[in-house]
Length: 233
Image 1: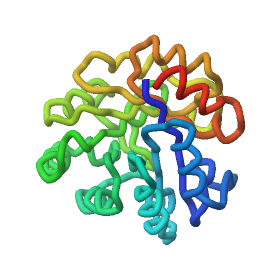
Image 2 (image 1 turned 45 degrees about the horizontal axis):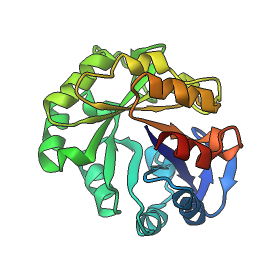
Image 3 (image 1 turned 135 degrees about the vertical axis):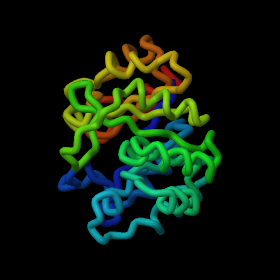
């Protein structure tokens, strides 16, 4: 199982999502280098300023992170258009995570899959109480998480990121059951949000989860990153 330490950027600093009021580190590049030194093969980087259109620009920081030796960056942050995906690759991302909003538009998803290497794309599956949702919108989504995964797989996209928004940053436990329902359907499943301890990582691995994204638990010492990497990578 792959360990993805999260680097959520706002105003040039590493923060706790979603609002970014808690600052974990003023130096994202240094923190990224520390994660790589701990043995991580991937970093999950999110530009919250871009995602929530604050006007902030973290592009230079992202380029500096992607330039670190042996860094492989999975870039997220509500990437809603093909132009935003293209910009993500231009910053040096090895994989770009398409927003649930983009993926729920079949024409946009198909066009994006045709424009970029499909092995370098992932689809974000945002849920609340197991139901697919669009972050920041009350619009009803007439798809299930499984159906969205199947849509991605049909286009050759082989990775999904499953995230329960209600658990984000809570340390209250991830939705392993919901993510496990997607396992074995043609895509690697990466689970995000809610991790609070090493036992939850073991449970995710046992459920066939291919990767986990760790944020607050690492920054606040609930999970020791070197231990997690040595156990699961």
